[in-house]
Image 1: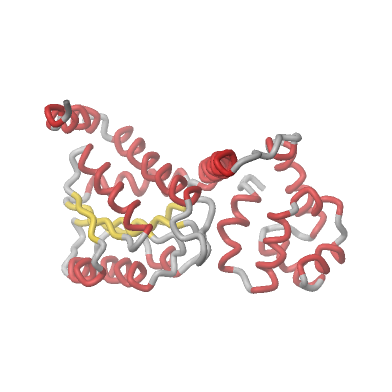
Image 2: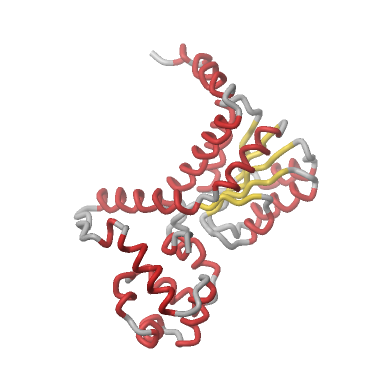
Length: 275
């Protein structure tokens, strides 16, 4: 398998059945221990069954537990965390370490073909609507800001009623970037569904690889480090999303190099606003 195993599990675990999610969480929490366990031991530790472990492995594209462990071993062999890296001693060090891991995993998760398609369609759009709620609104605002820097007409709305009305009147010449870390926020999903129904191209940005938002979008870009109800707006989740936004901007300027000139012009336009 070429896809990153640990990052994929982290992105998909929130959408698994309870039994499979417990197995995924056990593997993510104790990856090294998993390598030495039997299928029975993993089932017992995760509070599941041997049949669930087999199903879990098959859902990840392996014929059985042996193939899954082999792929995990190969990934851990190239992972700094598996080479005796020291754990950070304070909270700041822990934040830095988790951010680094989140960025590396996001790099692995980014589908380059989807990124190129999103860039091409956003460049072709006459107007780009950006939407997110609560912490996701921060990312949506960043998207709109970056679009303005390269000369793409854009705005960020955080009022669900306003953006739903805008989506209902959208058309094929427009595009939407909808941000939801969980991918399950009702308003975000509805905006994506309504905009797409009107012919607008919809890009979803989420930390979950399988979610209602992903299903409702034309293209999904997945960041690492999914949030939980208690970690909404967590730094690793946000920095992963911002990496995707910057990667998208880089791809847009790669496809249309003239946009780089606009970056300079927009910077010059506000150059007199600082002491």
